[in-house]
Image 1 (tube, rainbow, N blue to C red):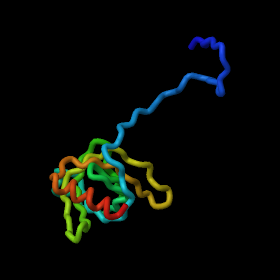
Image 2: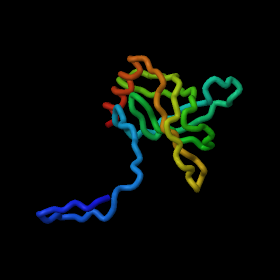
Image 3: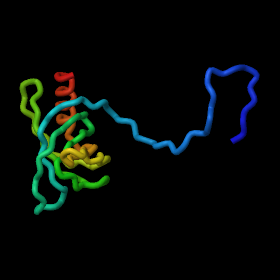
Image 4: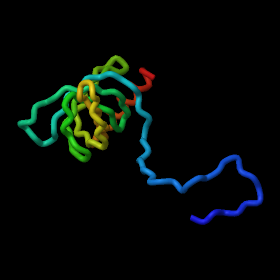
Length: 137
């Protein structure tokens, strides 16, 4: 890297070129903190036991799901089911979610968080999620 000559002073000094830059996709919608229960299992495996997890945050396009025994990997698909109430209506969502991130296990209890993207939701389900977020924000 070649130094650049300048005829004016700067309020800072560049000591080195930036290192590796990690590129992250931007979220389509902000996530809202929440505490909902969700059931999940590996998609397509009928003999897989349904497990219980806690939804830590949610948006109409995805969620963060904390699980006690993480076994999924990035790219895996999970059968996901959860409920919430919005505008006085009980909403149940059954969908397939794609694992986009697996967090580091917590040293205390070995739980970890999955970053999930909803594979497909009906428009009415997305609207219900947006309504739920508006009610609780």
